[in-house]
Structures are given as C-alpha cells and as structure tokens.
Image (cartoon, rainbow, N blue to C red; front, top):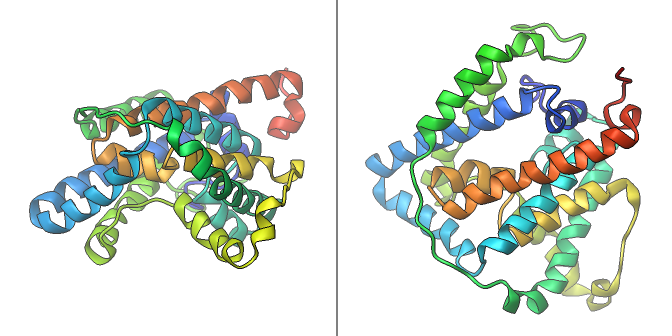
Length: 285
C-alpha cells in the first residue's frame, strides 16, 4: 500500500473528484489479483474454497440489496472524509499519517454503536437471492485502459520517484489480492477487515453494559465512524466486498462497490466545491 502511495489521504480524496487514479488502479489490481487467486484455489483446493465461500456468503444471506448499498454509500462518505478505509487505516497508523489514529478511534466507535443497534435493525434487513456473473477479466481490461490514459508515473505525489519510492499501484494491489491464497488455505476465510473492529469493541461492551449508552460524536473521527458503521451495515468493506465478494462472484458485492465509490464521489464533490483547500490540501484554479 505504501509503495503504491495509496495510503496518503490526498490520493484517496483526489480519486473521488477524478483528479488522480492511483487508488482505483490499486483497488482494481487487488480485486483482479484476488479473483484470479480464488479461481485457482477453487480448482486446486476445492474443499478449502467451499468453506471460505460459504463463510462469506452466509454473512450476506441476512441482508437485502438496499441496506448493503446504503451501508456501502455511508462507507464511501467515510472514506472521503477520513482519506482512509477500514483496512488501510491500520497501515496509516503504522506509517505515522497525521490524524490516522483518530480515524481508528472513530472506526472502533462506529463498530461499538453498530453492535448496539444491530439487534434492533436486523428485522428490517431482509435478504434476497441474486445470481452473479464473471468479472476478473473485465477488471484486467479496465486496468489496462486506465493505465493507457492515466500513466501511474504521472500521478504519483510530488517528491515521489517512480520505480524507487513508488511502484505501479495495480501491481501493488495484485500483491494484496494474492493474500487470498494463505487466507483461504490457512484460516478458511477470505480477506476482509471491518469485522475485526466488531471483535475488538465487543470485549469492553461485554464487560460494561453502561458502555452501550455512550455516544461519541467528535468531528475528528466521523470519517472512521462512518466507514466502519457503513461497512457493518453493508456486511463488508472495501476489502470484504471489493476483494473477496467480487472475486467470489457475489452480485450483492458488485452493487456494494459502486455504492462505496458513489458515496465518496458525491460527498467529495460537495466538499471540494465548498472548501477545495481543506479537502485536498491545495488550491485549484
């Protein structure tokens, strides 16, 4: 992620207003790489594949299409505000990205709140069965088209040297996608990050019932809050739906991914039109 320069909040925010395509290239590279790996695992290790596939699909069985798209849209808004996503924020904290720790705290708060309201909203999240088409070849072709019109060397941030301090984002994304192989073979699951937030926040909530009544509304971590809350409502995040769900040919995930980008794009253009400097950190004419 760092070599692909997608950990910089500026790169994510400018993606949503179509001024930089690094994030999209890495996302597509990771998703395509994931799809190819999962296809290979399904042929070589069919038993492991079925266990992992059933584990992911079961998380979507209780959710209808509308709440999944709505949750993904909220997630996209959170990505726009924070310049991060559920999986990437951990990398940003480790890399010392400013305010990334607030995004992490906001994400944990969003997970805690969702854990409280989940029993109350579940009856309204009705499921629906959908069939799914193949997608990995289409993503590969789209990556090639993006690279032809938007060469990655011209999109890296100022002060970055291509092939030295930065590498092609689609290649870095593909490497992330290859992590599906050890995930499926060793722990019988697919890539995803937002459910881990629920695991962590459930521990103190189980001990202190009064914690369920706490409300944290600090503006500094509203992006992280929306990202995780939206992810749990959608039963998946950028990696859960984008890398695993699409690769497993889940049509609900294929609706969720445009929902994520839709939320980021809508809020991104609104934010940029109101205050371009604070959105991107620079002024545009």
